[in-house]
Length: 120
Length: 107
Image (cartoon, rainbow over all chains, first blue to last red):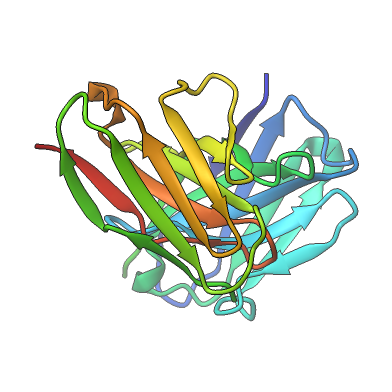
């Protein structure tokens, strides 16, 4: 069974750096074609893709946020980490991680999401 | 970035109705178009991938069609559990992009 679970702080202050961890099971990120993305959703708004890391360590970022995002993986721990610098109240959202693999080219399995509020 | 435009943004329908949601890409994305269903407070769920392939476990009343820039999601006979928000998403290139969603409400 494939599962993903997001973890991180529920509350961060403006200008702080957010670090989120996606812990997954049921697949390996060292398998060719496997990828994990981060996607967020502000309250009442649409989904926004943020970043992706591939099995071969290729990394891709949102055009509008790429200067603030860093994605990395720890294959031995089955974890993907996303950092977002200089957090702003506009970054308040539920943050999801999701699996994508080459055979499907879609986000087939999602984590439950973690809500992050940016407030002083 | 490829822009995804969904219409309508909201839709009221009754149980048993046939419903169609459209999605337009700002450039040719071949068949790299996916559809998701999201219920309130839950993560999105994949329904259709590469425009017309039904994800395992998804009821056959859901279908997708289209290629190039114009795509549709059709629900042949609405069931009570289908009232949700639906998103399209392109997987032709990175950055991945989503439509703004279509909220399907009970009439």
